[in-house]
Amino acid sequence: MGAYWFHGVLIIFIVILWALEKKFPKAMASAEESLLVLVITSIMAVSFFQVIARYGFNTGWSAALEYNTTAFSWLILLGMGYGLRTSLHLGVDIIIKAVPAPMTKALSLFGAACCMLYGLVLLDSSWVALLGVDTKGGAIDYWLKMYKIGIGSEELHYPGFIQDAFGVQSRIHRWLLLLILPLGLALMAFRSLQAFVDIATGRRKLLISGHEAEDMVEENKHILKD
Image 1 (tube, rainbow, N blue to C red):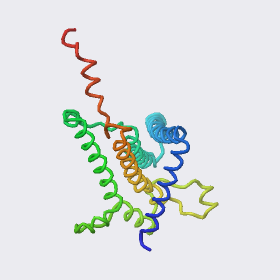
Image 2: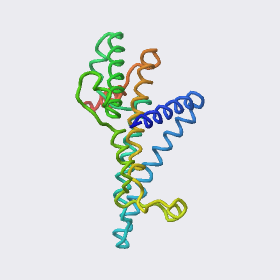
Image 3: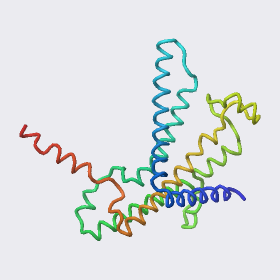
Image 4: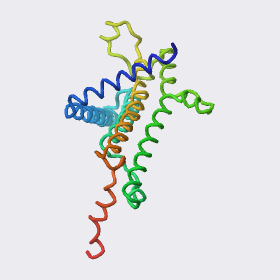
């Protein structure tokens, strides 16, 4: 069966997410933002209390660095899809805004398609072999290897009651921490597809946020006079 079962899990996840966002758009958007806020807040809280514990009491949490590293990777991988969905990614739009509107749309569609293909290649590059390219591997393959090996993290441990209730090993399984890798890339590909459809149907003009430069010019246009 190989890795195909996990492909199916990711497809089911994306379909369920799409259905929920269609049914409850505001609630799902709020949930996604709340998750990102929760992750970054936890990073800040752990860092703050670690500094207090280290310099105030000469102690600390030995797993703080690994937790923050893992949480930051979750923040990045979740943020990729969120940025695509909300057009928050920064980009250079001087060319696409200098050409006629039809060309702008074509370039935006090309960018969305490239982002989707990029996410799919990182997720699982084995399908690229159909194009005659000798390649294999990807996030799914790497995650499955971690799942089969079953090794634990360096410092992060399951709470004692979970160890007692389920009889698991002391250290948190690495595959559990790395689950965000295939999920994040699948979300990136999905959000790119959504952006492609929105641009094609006229509900959206650009894949990126194209207002930062204009806002800065407007904000500082009188700075020399002052």
